[in-house]
Length: 564
Image (cartoon, rainbow, N blue to C red):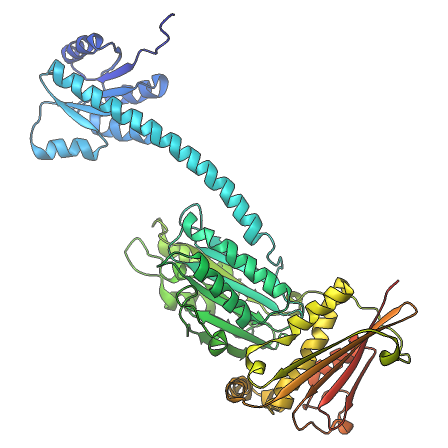
């Protein structure tokens, strides 16, 4: 068979003809073809034209010396390994170090020794083979990472809320980010938003995002509270994560009325609530919990922080990669510069202003950690549309005689602290009736009835407390205190369903063991007692009928929908 091996080529760069002739002769005996240049400029041009496999570079030459030529060739070679061996008569340490600093891989002292030359060439060949193998492996890994990144984005990020009032970005330090963003509307039209930061960054960190996303979306869709979602995520991570790996997380829930935000901050930087009118920061919401995945039992209800929202307020969430970014002068960006960027953004979008300030500060400094930033503008356009529900005219009902099924759910004493009945009940209704189109409206009705029975009936809280910011915060603090101290109490749900012609109706009764209220004098436009405020107005819009029974501690609604 003919020999198809490619003869290696060497580039000899020396302004002395004699030196070139000697080296050419030695290389010919080692089966090398040779190319020759008299100065660095010619060497760079020949490298671009001929792509030699090894270069022998003199140091001192006219036009362009060996140092400059080597730096230019190494730049052109990029990740490809092209060995450069410096030819020099100098033996002092500074001169030899200068050769290495310029990008040289070895040096050969004049006069040349054939056996030393051969050994250096063989060493460079081994390094070149290893480099080719590494580059091949790198290409394969890079391709696999690209595929994994696409799968990750489709599985984790793709189903996030797309809304012009939400601006967010993740800038990974490597191909994969250890930061993650998840967002979803709850059945009650609240907005759940999660920013997570796994230990470290890269593929190992990103893998943890898959189970987190799965739990977050499944539990949000079923109507579980943010505290319950975080407990579920923590349990999953304790099963999944190796020792020493954990997840810092901010989970926020913006109410569908845009009047409050509940914040859970576990091991993350401060979350900022920015006044929509003045651009001044009204609240710095600090972490008050360990990250997720560290211990088995985290009671997330203890770390909930609830704040009043005003029109056009903005929420700023970020990972520590933002404030811990470094400049070329080894300074940290820090919280103070972040605050300045926010409060000085009078005529600019806060999100853009922050990144402009960060870019100006960091300059060409390599990013050391994942940087994530989120800006949420709390205006009406942020909310999803209310699911359509065609009103049904009032009619006479006979649930006891014509009912298809009944369901009773009773919560007592400490179970009122530990169990959220609404997702359980709504999922039972969906199992029995299969009316996904009515899920949102039914969930809203059940939530309003349960929250009012618990807050106003069992815990004795007055909605009038929320009339000012101080009272607003006190309301939710007092709620947690009374719930924690609760020893006796009971809430009972009774559901019955009937079909009349083409209309299906569900009767929902919620009875609490509280003292009730004077429902006879309840104005249509929201007296702040019992089922009150916007809640009762919304229920009257959604339900065929809403009424109170007994001393006001029993609420009964009839919710109807057309079946064809």
